[in-house]
Length: 222
Image (cartoon, rainbow, N blue to C red; front, side, top):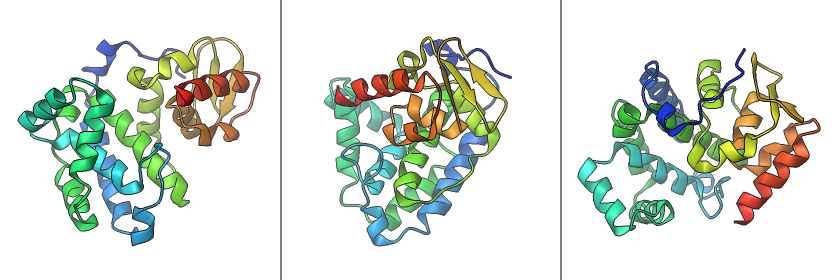
């Protein structure tokens, strides 16, 4: 049973080897992408302003050559929003087959998976769900991957602020965290809500849901 979440940036480094989990998650994502119809690729994802294909393009950043990534970061003047925009626009003319090929070629590669494995896994799992949820492509996230995401929420996405002074309890697995008004529900819905996805809030219950909803709303408006 978990009662502490490693939200320090230092916790994003090291720890047990998460690369097998990252590899498995990328493999599952690639398998899903092979089944998508042309309209599904154009469907809005849970990421505001991004279609499914844009989310896929974003996820390729982890397997970029270091020189390309640093060049993009320089052009973006170290702004994550501008950096994401540069990388998504680069892929705008790529076919869906090319996007799938690039995802598949990244399964056993990636600087992020080596240097920042915790952050890499969180980003991948959350964005995988950003694609699946609007398409109605439900799945059960393997418990070891979901637990790793819940234990290491992304501080750069505001998860640390959203979970502060709340009692979070997953009712479908042995995981809980914190003290305060209670938020209870599926582990996946908790993870998505902490990542700022309002679409998951309706699956949660407890006195703390109103607090969490307000925090997600503020971050979305911002």
